[in-house]
Image (cartoon, rainbow, N blue to C red; front, top):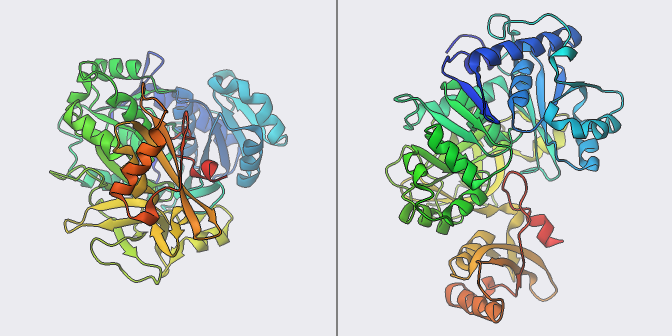
Length: 494
């Protein structure tokens, strides 16, 4: 660790780091060289602190453009290359970009990017297009203050529509230090990890890419999840850390245990980005001999706040204890701390918490309480061991005749039925009760739809209070899952 506040000082120093993408291995020395080329390009063209857009799939171009922004003292703004034109236009207009670095893998989006922001410079990341003199990303890195913005990441988690959350050099470093200070063993042997989630998502960017670079790991980049390819690379690169969304673990849990044998060498098997179906964790532990644990965090907190790792045992359905350096409160509607076992909103405080949303003081204020506490909008309970269990979001709470219904509770009951693959629950307006519970269910392969709705309703009646039983159960072919693995519950409520 150096005294430099620039995050780059801990990302390009470990000699063991390397990126593996499309079968090509890029060692850290090459990353330094390529990042230095583009850092020189940016430094000659823009003042320090300028916003630089990044559009690329999970590949070396994304990594080098991101590192170049940090080295040059710019603010990296990673963007989803698959965004529809209207969303891309809205996002570009919200962050005042001076230039977009477009990876060769995203060339198909060049015209839509130019159309969305015609006055913005767009540079395709071909070395021939780089201007300015290359720099050494470590020796010549821009001097920054710890609270200078390092990245803007788009999130819709706690403030409604998609907004760019500011993450500073201090925020991202503090999150990495928190993970290093936990009881997870990251140093006794060479580490290798796989990026299955997009690098424009906080789990991919900070918990996988940044952490991997900081500990000198091999980082295998995937653009899309492919179970067979993933398992081959886990075996080939002796992967020790694997984190991904619940839909990845669901797919792996369905395979024959003989196929998933390479996963038994993992030191860390982590589900994040969305709530994990407890049944998946049970299957991975019992049938595949993989100790799958669940983590919890948000874009606005730079990644992980709670993790089941570093603890001998964590109950299925729990995200474990709070990470080192993080303070958490659970509060009721009157902003009083709740008792052990009761559900309250998660409030967070610590150096990893974002200072707010870019140029949106109103949205920032809505997520603050008692000065420096961040209101996550998530609901959770805590047990006697200090382990948290997430039960949903405040805005997802369904109120039936004055009684609170937590969607996660109903979903877990539905998913415990052997016919059910996955379930999602939403509240809809009801003239008699204020709201009613509607459920959407996908079935396991080979299950007939005939009579299953009545069977599931009876199952719920046997396991839930009457007001929690879904008034309607729709069997659907698939649930709306976003690119980072999160359920788009609002799509079901419409």
